[in-house]
Length: 210
Image 1 (cartoon, rainbow, N blue to C red):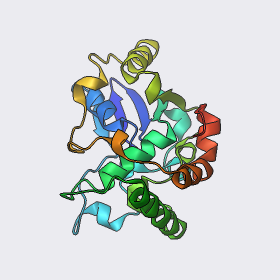
Image 2 (image 1 turned 90 degrees about the horizontal axis):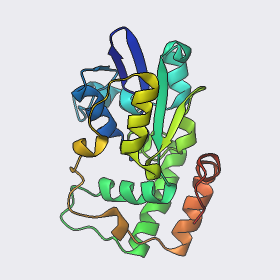
Image 3 (image 1 turned 120 degrees about the vertical axis):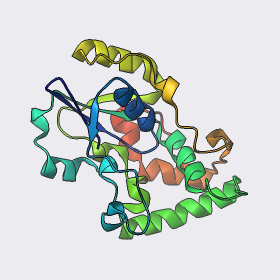
């Protein structure tokens, strides 16, 4: 989870994967906030290769073991509709392939295999699969991506005097390629798996179950 410091103040941004967090990180850095507890280098020989996941994607339990979260001036996160987050993850997970089957059967098969792997390793895919509610710590301000990230960040900046100029939309990460997550076909079985696996996310963050 990136930590941002500026003028004696500290902000903990809990980066739930596939919720627009990269745009938020760009926004803070562009406004002069010093970023730490962040490492985007992966692969053999890197520090992240020795960890269960990158520090920017740690969830609530290890965060509370590492940090005295009550000492931050602000702790916040961004969450997303679980179905939309799932679609985005599917596209991201296949981003390096020339051709990707976006059909319902292929997507369903991939998710079934992913859930089996998750049972053995809850940090699977750099913590990208983990339910969003597990990332929270006490006192976390929760923003929903669907409610408008730009407006939410402006309000957050105003209420906490963060001095953030510009909006996250200006800093979008387009590295996921030309494929659109909306083209990922979701079968009835896949919807049921999403509903069951992320049931607490739907309930806690007020999203309608598919």
